[in-house]
Length: 277
Image (tube, rainbow, N blue to C red):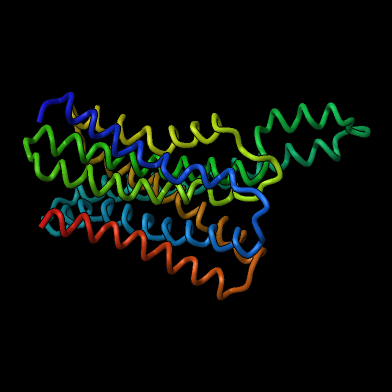
């Protein structure tokens, strides 16, 4: 497989994330439906959380069982540091954004409508849009690591493995588009196509970037770090989506949605394993 073919297929694997993005423009959605969609997204992300942590921990365990203490300690440090940064950076960033929104109402004197609109523009987006952006960032970090795997397999002339990875990751990305846009369904302001395209680039674009880098250079420590960053950011998003689901619908609705999301995640993974076999 030529480099151009690998890069094209890597781009296709990342682009499938756009298939689920139009759901973000759904309007007049009931609270129960929004909760169910958010819960399905949560289930998909719970699977991804398990998946990326498994891939990050595997090389650390290899170093431990081989008796290479220095490599083990370095990789374990990368895992903990990356996970902490991925999780806590989003926590503190969200707190900072909320403080800025609060100042729009409580800042010295009465805030005019124009001032609030300027502040709202500065902080960026509604809470639903911020949550969708956080999801896209977490998935993007995950997909960058997947792109590295595609590029590395192709560069090593493991063509069948590279094709299987492209197919499997493409299937995963198709479900991740739903996860990104679930918080946007029924939002007061319908997201523009350009905003949805931006979310798709944030979430799916790193697959292509990782494929490019993986073609020429791959480092185990870099992969561990990006998997750890992805796991931390995904955990934060899972916590946020659970809060959304609980506020909108009953526990059975939320639980069934999570189960469906987990099923979608594992189903695409089993297809990947079966194709590899």
